[in-house]
Length: 160
Image 1 (cartoon, rainbow, N blue to C red):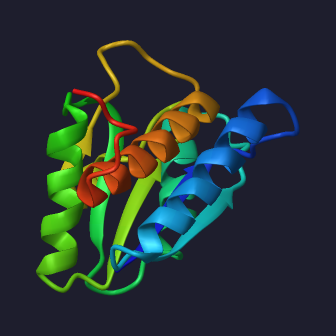
Image 2: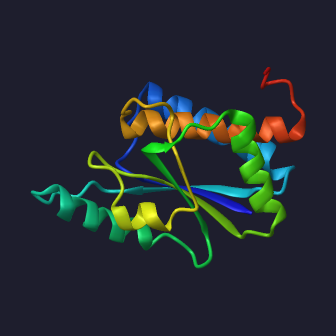
């Protein structure tokens, strides 16, 4: 199964980029052994539209252009479920075992994801009830993907 993160906004050089790169590389290495082929990152420019609805619609169109047919969509949204790491890992394993070709994690911009994309998502997850900047959400998601791979591999990184 291919895994991809489609995120509105760019990670600039700095600590967030370094952490994201670290977890990206760790997941790539651990995930290959578990049947997760390639981790893609697609950065979508933030819309410059004046109103939130238009910004979300423009960003949704750009995100949608990167979504393959029959992909499992996961929305990162503050209204989503708070999953523990083990449950998150089980979702990934189940989708992989069911033969899903792609699982796509979507991170919206400052206004969030469009209602249309949220409706299409098989799962919506949140990292707590706080609102997080998209850069931090990307780092936390990549860390959770790596943690999920270690849980599925029985590696001691996750000590629950």
